[in-house]
Image (tube, rainbow, N blue to C red; front, top):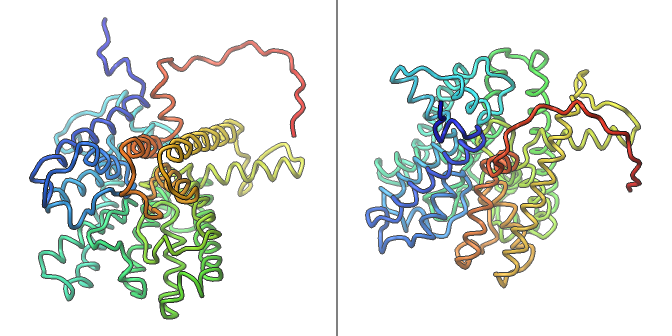
Length: 442
């Protein structure tokens, strides 16, 4: 029997094609006259905006709040929601609503999309993802609306509340204010709500489900315990460093509350969110360097964020420590980590560095900008963060295309993207083992 086109595709190829198809549809809609308040967006700018929305990045070449009409903003919002939750999550949700049976092949694609350990419980996890997303976004939207209703008319406040709630939970970073969240730098309520949305969206749905089910840290899975521990460290430590280094620098214009909240929010957002309360261009070069590292690490697996992921970073770090100590195994929480996980982590990091290096080289060849701003832009695009040193809107057409490809690669995942480009099917491990060869390294 002849297989259809989709039957011959691997799960990685289906995922990549799904994201690409959504970007194409979004770009065509954003290029229409009804999506703009003035002249229609150029095809490149529409494609850039659609990619940034679907890849939940937040880099913009046109101002979302002023340049796009309400219809255009609604299209961006839909692309953020679909891109944040994932193509297969949304497709499975529709299938469940209409009573369609989820096939084995569709479960394989879902497993790839959600980074799940096995095929068991995938449909239940998708239902949980949808429930958590709608609940968290709705509650946050109500709180934001209460805060904004004194600043804007009721309908506008409601629309802003819904848009920013979805954008924050999906770690997208798109805003309608025009200055991101800089006007709220000293506002405890808005800071807490947005940071909560960013963290919840970035730790991964499987971790949220695990925490809700077991209601105790000691009973959590090894994966969840590692994610929560690394996430906490990557929030607190950078926040302290930012406060110490920028107290009389970028944080100087604010009161004590603004300085504390500004350092904490900057630490949270640099990992993948894209919002900012403190102007990114005002940060010192040392903090910018730290931000680049945080953006490279990114969020956690099966989340709405990007980067190489917190667990990948932790695996590599623990592997290095074990090598230095002369230990044969990598362990965490009294559990031995399989070698294949270590190998995959190293491969992901290497490919990620290669993609960023290539993107940085191409941007440097086409743009007359400081190297720090170009590297920042490349890492922000790959990590689907959305922060910028102010060069995004002035990028040339060629540079925009480079950033588009980098955002797409970062959202789909470097290994998934590489597998999608490969036409080879996975093969069974070879039973042949060659004699060892000695190589001198270091």
